[in-house]
Amino acid sequence: MPYFMNRNENMNRKEKLLQEWNGGVLRGAQAKLAKELALTQSAITRWMNGIQLPSEENIQAIAKVLGQPLQKVKDAFLSENLENVFSPEDVQFIPVWGIVSAATFKGSNLTEDPIDFVPLPTKDKRIFAVKVKGSCMEPTIKDGEYVILKKQEYTDYDGQIVLAVVDEEYTLKRLFVTGSEAELRPINTEKFKAIIKPLKNVFIKGVYKGVFRKDDFL
Image 1 (tube, rainbow, N blue to C red):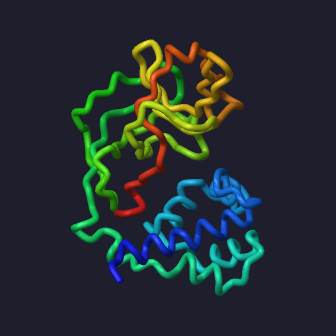
Image 2 (tube, rainbow, N blue to C red; image 1 turned 30 degrees about the horizontal axis):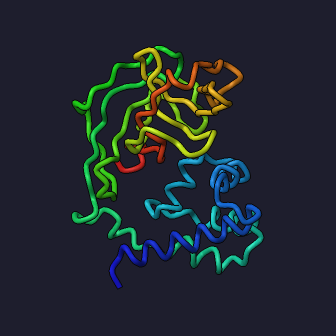
C-alpha cells in the first residue's frame, strides 16, 4: 500500500480517538489534549501529522488522558514510517515570507520574496511560513519560531489563528467575529491586549496550520 494511504489511515485513527474523547467533536481536541499533557499544541500537531513520534512516556500519558487501552493508542500513534516522511517526492521547501511582530500591533509589510525556506511533507503550493517576533502568542507560538500558514482570505470559525492585515500592517492573532466587528486576540492575554476593528477593515492572508522549529530537525 502506498505510504500516503498508510499515513492517512493513521491520521484517521488518531482523529477518531481524539473525537471520541472530546464528546464527538474534533475541533479543539488537540488544544485540549495539549493542555492535559502540559505540552504545546504544536507538539500534538507533529504527532497527529506523523512528523514526530511521541515517546513511550507520552504514549502512556495519552492513553491515560483519553481513557483508552495502551495498545490501541500505540497502534494509532506509533505506526508511522518516519523514514518516508521526508522522502523526495513528498517534500516541498516552503518559502518564509518575512518576520511578523506578534508582540505589538505594528507588524511587518511582508512580501512574497522569501527570506528563508523550511522543508515540509506537502505538495500544497498555498502553504507558506513567517517567522514570529514577540511573545503575545505564547505558549502556542514562541518568539523566533516559524509559523506554517495556508493562503486563504477567509476563515469559517472563530478562534482560528490567522495572519491578518489591518491598516496596512500584518499581525498574527486569534480571530473572533461579532456582527460587523472583528477582534484580533493574542493568546497571552495577561500581557497583551486585543485589537478591535471593523470586520471590513480586516483582511485575512493566511490561516494557521502549525509551527516549524528548525531545532527539531538539526
